[in-house]
Amino acid sequence: MTLSDLINRTSPPVPFLEGDNIPWHEPAFSQRMLKEHLSQDHDLASRRSHKIDKQVQWINQELLSSKPAKILELACGPGLYTNRLAALGHECVGIDYSPASIAHASEHAKQDSLACTYLQQDIREADYGKGFRLVMLIYGQLNVFTSSHAQKILTKAHAALADNALLILEPHTFSAVEKIGNQGPSWYSAESGLFSDKPHLCLEEHFWDAPSQTAAIRFFIIDVATAAVFSGIKPCGKSVALLAKPSLVQSNVCRL
Ligand SMILES: C[S@@+](CC[C@H](N)C(=O)[O-])C[C@H]1O[C@@H](n2cnc3c(N)ncnc32)[C@H](O)[C@@H]1O
Image (cartoon, rainbow, N blue to C red):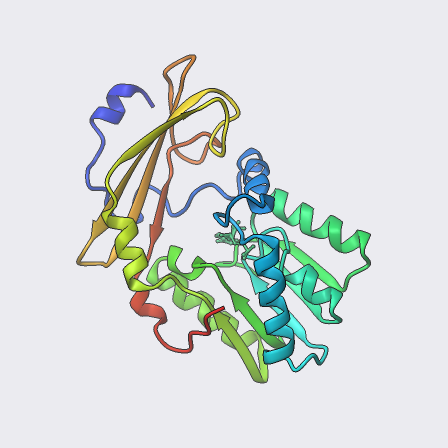
């Protein structure tokens, strides 16, 4: 992609046409993203440890009465919840398609001999298994899927639950999604960062599609040395993160 492609871009983008998420599953991108998950300076990719500790304690004590349970976390990232829950005696399965996150989660589970199984798979396609006392999908991840994928995920999650089991969903609120969509454009320069190891510019624009109630964030990453504009699913690429209808998930919300 060149600078003139950027000038001639489609604006506003058609929801979900240019891509359906940032490239979490790309090896180099996922390695860089892992640093953000583990950072104690912000809560952007995962919450900071002290917050996760409190939430895990709440899940264990309030939801599970501290009784050993079989738990499934969808989009588990680097296993920050599942490894903690397993350390409290639960048996956990985590599914995520980020290779660096799954490697991190598995290594820690192995080191600490935790009862955790990690699967590097896309939760839209993965087989979830059965008999879980708790299934969780947190931190706004349900919002990033198209309506049909969100329905598919919820149907599979429902089938994976045992009788009298619990589902924790933590979607973004409507106002949070709308606010993302209505932010103005912005840019920054960096020596290296989430989207590239090299000096680059990141141009970001936000869109709000009122009819479909969908927000979109479009990134263009421009390499400073070559002025190349990276696109598609390449680790430095332009990506579109789309947050789907909040109305899908209004019921059975358990806020953490
Ligand atoms: C914001 S992070 C949250 C991770 C974890 N739940 C936490 O709070 O630490 C979102 C996670 O969703 C994962 N993800 C996004 N789409 C996915 C998909 N289709 N299949 C599997 N994982 C996905 C990403 O790889 C990433 O690890």
